[in-house]
Length: 624
Image (cartoon, rainbow, N blue to C red; front, side):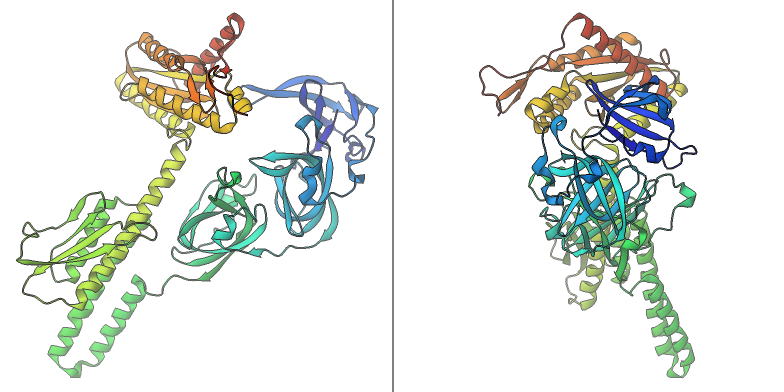
């Protein structure tokens, strides 16, 4: 048996949480009252526990573990002390901890040392020693700061292809040795050479978003996007958040933090990375946006107007001419400023592009202007005789920051007129505004899609499903109608990942999603709630039998096997049904009702017959 000691940060009584390994698995021990000094000798000791047994539950009230409540230290009897104190183990270089890595139940505990470059109490920290760095998972709340040198003892593990130290305890050496960040570029960070390193990289701000749990800055470096994220301290309320570093769109900043890479890049391919900031001051503004903006131009126009009035001796004609020019410039810049505000507030793209063409028309003394989006709509005032020889058409490409052009913007003039420099200037200004509007709209649409859709299966996620469910309940109350909710849990799905790998599991989920979507009616909504759980919102039904008919059609998705490279999967699912308002009248209770119905089916299946599992194709060679 082994013990993992952790104390909650807000505990009013001396106590600890112990994690004990038994022959059947891990259990948590809630020790209400104990001396921290006495607990120090329990790590890796064989113990006998006396207490009150209980269960742990997640947010869906499903049992996730076992907990034993022990009132005092007398309820823990030491049968055999650890053969070697974990803090007396020889130091292992950070980049050599995998030398002792074994299958999880055979891995030996190791001790490493390094300087803290990132720390989230109760969750994880990053240690760096020389050129090596390591992600350490720990539930400790010790008062450790970035720059402190600490020892960590735990078990080597692999997470998405990267080594880490799991179930770790930490001990502060009481000395500081701050680590200087490595100055890098976007290309360096996508090469996986700086995973978990403390790095510094520059980029141009595209947008910044304050969330309930974190602040995110979306940056562009060398035409490529990446994110810098500052996670708010645990327990910080909305009213107690530190002010967000205000970096205007277009400004260039330097961010310093820990480089973490996504799932794709962990398997050897260049991919997206994120910089985890330690504190708000990890952001340094290098260059502000261009001085040329609406406010400065308005002030300049006002100054010129004052000068013209003061020098009124130059004559009425010249004075009137200058005033007309200044008024036109101020009007154009005012409308340009409103367009920038609309872009910043994510107003409809078509309306913004139409206002841009109107602005160009004003700059060109009323000349017709229109915009053609690549593979999209034509917006603006295109004259009917645009294709005739009576008009001279001027075109300016709407360039993208990367990739093919986004479209073109046009202006029409009388064929007898000569080209002027003002035409290219006006169209160039419009092209820049159109580029900013189109790319900002696409970025916003992508962010909204990522927040509401599952990236693997491209169906709604749990957040979007709950929102749709609340909207459907509101509609049903207005019309006194009924609807159904189907809860789907895949049987034996863990075997797919264990036997054939996560890639096979992903392909299985993607093909199953397409099959289920083909069985649904227009207006029905499919969502992936997480892992191997799906839900279907069945609208416009008259009774429970119609919902059951849809459930039967979903079960037919498993009639045909799922083919893979060297294997064939025979899947099945447990399906539960809930009807509004017969079974529940709120979103949460309706989900629970469908979930309970599904678990009843799963329990019945386990008692009556063995669920279909994962079988290799007899005619194919199983994957090694």
